[in-house]
Image (tube, rainbow, N blue to C red; front, side, top):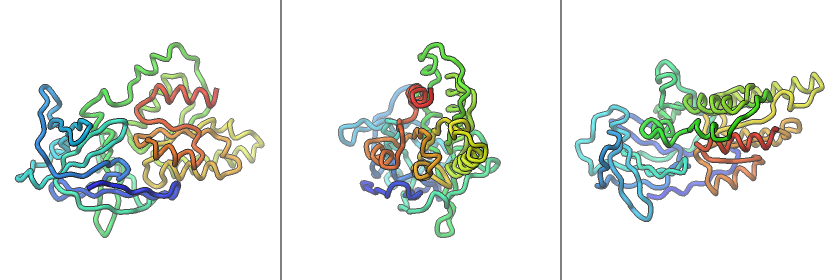
Length: 304
């Protein structure tokens, strides 16, 4: 089963694929999926992480299989032939996630996805980025970037990229960031701070950052100062509950004051199609996670 779903840019909507493990419903953004297929045999890899089942090559690309069932602590299937692979493409990686069942696709608004409770869903170690209620069923949206980073740390943000930029001066210009992943939010903050940026405000969704930007716009107008004294740049993920990064970009670029701000989209979803969407909405730059060194270089160009 191939996925081929394109949504109009900036509408704050998404398609999620519902899948189940041991009867529990989870969700993944369809934009991350390249294909769904039945479980198949694979070549095991020596000395690999216990949750890496092996690799296979369905066409021209070698796919690594992550056992999501084992990672999440559920019992293995009694009949592997009924299991499914969700093949994904994000962060410039090709990974198949082994699950029990694929249930279908739902089209919803990001505003219908609630942030998970930090106590119930594990706080900083949570792999949940949101909870969607669809047809009286709760579907937990999974942070697949965190899962991949947990199993294969070298695929995540590397602070060594900041060190490679060489000596840097401190910069107090105000930068705001938004990312729904607790782990990535902290890593981005740490990386920017290591790169010399000392005035950073981080938010967990697009609605939060939009409310903050609107308040800074009003303060700038009331005090008769340039908006850049309140916010110098915006760095945003695309996938976020309440409001996604594309809709956030659209609102910023339609505002007569805020449209001056450089908007940098930093997302695991950036590919050629997403580049087109971002440009249509007015994003000043777009790059794929986990390229944190490039993010700092681009930020430097826009606000120094």
